[in-house]
Image (cartoon, rainbow, N blue to C red; front, side, top):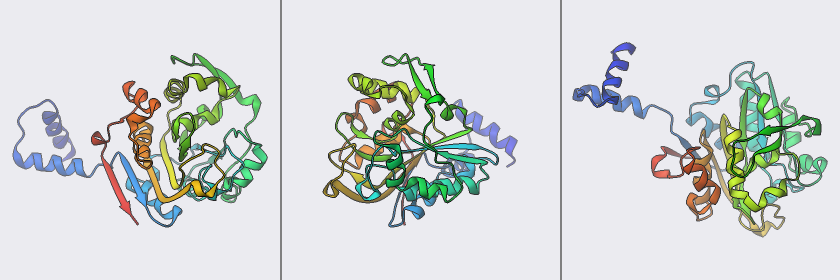
Length: 300
C-alpha cells in the first residue's frame, strides 16, 4: 500500500466508513508504531535512563533541529547539593544538553532565577559546571531581560517574564519532583516560576490559578521530569537527607499536565489532588486522566 492509499483509508476510518478487516489490521499496526505520549524510565544511571526515555518518545531529533537555539530550564533555585534533591539532578540536565548538541543545536542556554544566592545555587547544584563543560551557556539571569508581558490569565493579567524563553527556537523544561509546602508538589508547571521577575511571592494567594496562567504562556517543546531523587517533605528547599528518597526515575513527555499527573503518583497522590493540574486539564492544556495517556515504562 502506498502512502496516498494509506491516507485515504485512514481518512475513511476517521469518518466512520466501513474499512476491510485486513486494512484495519494495517491501521492498528500503524497506530502501535507511533511514539507513546509519556515515557517512564527507571534505572541506576541517570544518563542512561534519560537517553532511553528520550529515544523511546521519538529521539532528540524529533524535537531539536540543526541550528536551533535551545533553552533548558532546570530548577536551580536553592543553595543545595544534588544529594538533597532540592534542585534538578545535574546528570539529567547534562544528558539533555549533550543530546541537543548531538542533534546539531547551535546554542544551548541553561538558566534559572534562584531564590537563594545565584552564585551559590549554580555551583552547589552541580548544574553550571556540568553544562558548561559541554559548551552550553549557564549565565545568571539578567534583570534587563525581563519584559512585562500581557497574559490572558484569571489570576495574572501581566507579569515581567524572562524574554530569552520566548526568543529560543526550542524550550526544554527539566524540573525536579519534590514536596512543596503550598502547592503540595512542585514539578513541571511550577518550575516556570523561575522565569518570573518581580515579587514572585505575590502569586501565592492564588498559586494554583497563577501556575496555570503561566503554563498557558510558556509552551515547552519537551518536559523531562527528574525523579532520580525526590524530596518527600520540607520542600521546596529541603536540606535533610532523611527527606530524600531515591527513585532512579525519569519521566518524559510533550504534555506537561500528564507529566505532573504521573509525577503525583510517585508520592502516592493523583493528578486531581493538585489544584493546578486539575485546572490545567479543565482548560485543555494537557491530559490529567492517565487512562487516556499512552504510557510506556522502561526498566534499564
